[in-house]
Image (cartoon, rainbow, N blue to C red; front, side, top):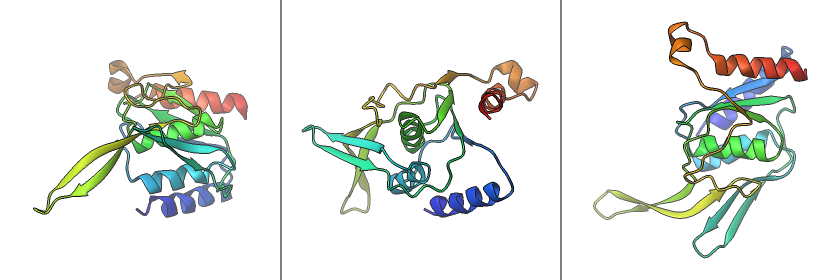
Length: 177
């Protein structure tokens, strides 16, 4: 719940010391709270669609950016096959609005809206009530978010303590700065 506020402070602090770009790593991130995910995506967008929810009756709920960006510096998002849910929505929102490039692997593909129904015995039932689409209307469910640049950490990289995905991100940013 505190992530949007904490991120805003961290971004401002880094910009004040001269950072020229951001690498946001959502690898192995299973997601989080929807409202906070939308707030974070909104921090980086001046305009455009953040996400589209489509229910079984084809009704759409479109979430748009509020034009209150925190930074306009270049962004690279790192993701892998375990990046899911909120981290996918975030990556799709920035990628779909040409605000960031995504480097890594295709994400998990958890593009469903789950609604919690509380039960009288204290339990809860999670019901999928809609699907998320990217700003460009790409289906996320089962397909994931495809990276702009594919990269994967290999077993040799792990053994040698080398993160080739971050290296590709730094190389990309150096090429555009």
